[in-house]
Image 1 (cartoon, rainbow, N blue to C red):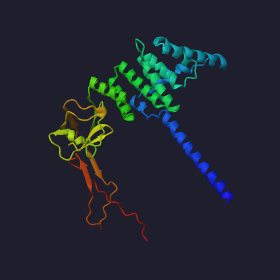
Image 2 (image 1 turned 30 degrees about the vertical axis):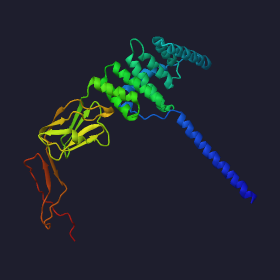
Image 3 (image 1 turned 135 degrees about the vertical axis):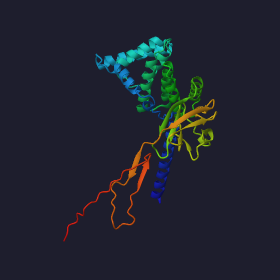
Image 4 (image 1 turned 180 degrees about the horizontal axis):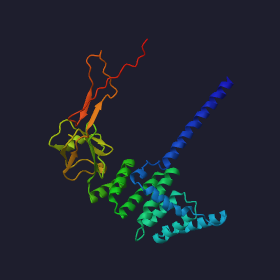
Length: 340
């Protein structure tokens, strides 16, 4: 009986320990910053990764001195740079952070983020440094803890770098991706709404596939379509002349239409108020002529078909696209079976 009591007491203590450990773990998670949602910068901003690699190379140069002396120099420059940063001496802070990064051991997101921030606040901001240093900070953050606050700060600095270079189309694309990753962030929502309002909502690209069955045409805006559950793209589109049976869908933020007639130009009219992301809408009615060229000539047949005299009927199925005539050659093949 005593043994049973001891085992029961031990089990009770073990259960309490497990519950306490889980509670502490959850408390620690709640107190820390949640991991960030990924924004695929290399896809959104092609070429920026290579620019960042070249820019980062200045921190990979061999550094003279023993390890103890080098560590002391790094610590001293970090202290000086932080002091200049705290004093809002942006030119000096930017210069000191560059010097610190040249001493190696540069795989700290905070150093690159501080360089990007200081460079963005100079009287004459260095747009390239802002963009590339923030990009490096974002990528390092993803591999060193993935802190959401650091990620958002880096992304906003990249957006600022794009604005300083008047690359507003790429900036709106980036802010829209950030809005999808952080839907509850009011600052990102505000930045996207203001950028869209200032630089206008416009058609960015029209992609037509005439040879698909049915034909396909996708209209991409500089701000992606809205994604509310009650959003129905067909409610916002009119065709001139009317097109029966056309399917209108949202695909990856684009407006796609399947079934426009080949060999014709259809005027696609988008109604004012078409919902877009971040609460923005199409400000006015937009008319887009969509030309679907004739499909290329095609002959679709079973080229391995055999006509057997005993078969009934002796037919060959052939489908054509934009062909008036087909020349058909039937060849007699002698029997190759051995005779006995």
